[in-house]
Length: 258
Image (cartoon, rainbow, N blue to C red):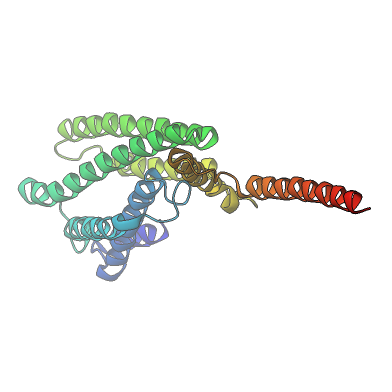
């Protein structure tokens, strides 16, 4: 925002857009949009809460992030850097299509991953994490609904103002997306606030579930493995019982000898 201020202040004073500052502005904006989308995607996949890594999806997520950054960077550079007048409709449509397509693909992937994470938590009966992810899914759904409504308003605003006569209030169009991104980041920070035991709690259910699965497999094979502590305790009790039997037998033998 500070860079945007200096960019517009220089533009207002000289009538020319400074190439250096404007390039920095659009680059940082593209990085911010890319990181925010990948952050939401990673959280929806359960990274850091349900599983420690993304596994084989890490390279795909990074590739999608790089592609989205390049598309957003190209669109913003063409629209802002050294440009005083608005670009033509056809050129803008040609540049907006890749960015909008990647946005739609990201939204679809986010909701698909979130649905799979909810099913996984429900199967594991992790009630606390399931409640957090349900709240996150509700907030994400509200964000998508607000985005669709605002896109409709943006289309109406531009259709009813072809000569840009309401330029003094046009800043609301772009400001809404910044407010929406900040609100989504605030929701994530609130739901997954760090604590002293957050890292230990993150995979506690996962470790317990793996142990339950191994125990179930051992019971299916008919091998009484179960809890190692109980097994050791049973062995001690059996050893103690057998020792008592041997002691009684030894006492009877000594009695016969006497």
